[in-house]
Image (cartoon, rainbow, N blue to C red; front, top):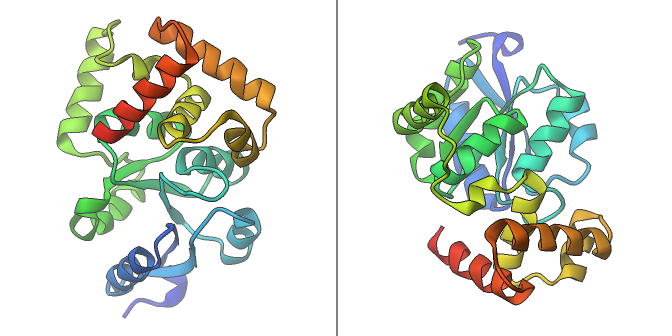
Amino acid sequence: MSNLKTKIKIYIIDDHKIVLEGLEALINREEDMVVCGLSQNGTDIMSKIEKTKPDVIVVDIGLQTGMNGIELVKAIRTRYFDIKPIILSQNDEEIYAERAIRAGALGYVMKSEATRTLVSAVRQIMTGKIYLSDNMMSKMLIDVLYKRPDKSSPVEALSDREFEIFMLMGKGFKSSDIAKKLNISVKTVDAHRNHIKDKFNLKSISDVVRYAIEWSKSH
């Protein structure tokens, strides 16, 4: 058995307790890994990271309290650049994985495959590589090589903040709810919603809301 000091220390953040417990058991079975902390939201996460000093942090992209996973990864990488983040998601990787990597994540693991791939992802990013599915890696490489100007969905043209607001609109959040959740002003939320409307070439915010709801259902 490896000495605890030489093990890869992993902190996991996920809304669902059953997911946390399952991943904790999975990781702690490995001789070279240990879970050093668990959280169900991103509240006060920086102080928890300071205390536990993880090598890797696994973050659910869809956290319901505080920042979502992508915003949390940005914050962590800004303050603790040596920590290697992995995004855990049940969402379509073709829509979310590229955003996650741009935000500073070094891996993107689908929840449906986590028990099979998470350990491999941890080992891979610890060697300095990025972990993505073979399909996603090929797609991103082709996009870079051929510099594709066209995007398969107008959603991909949104900034990360616009995308976050768009997702919340799709879940039925009003401007005041979004402002409170993201700790920004209603005026700022409305400005982003108008930018989304313009990028989608839609006539009204109601059209954006309907689009967001339908898009959310299909993703």
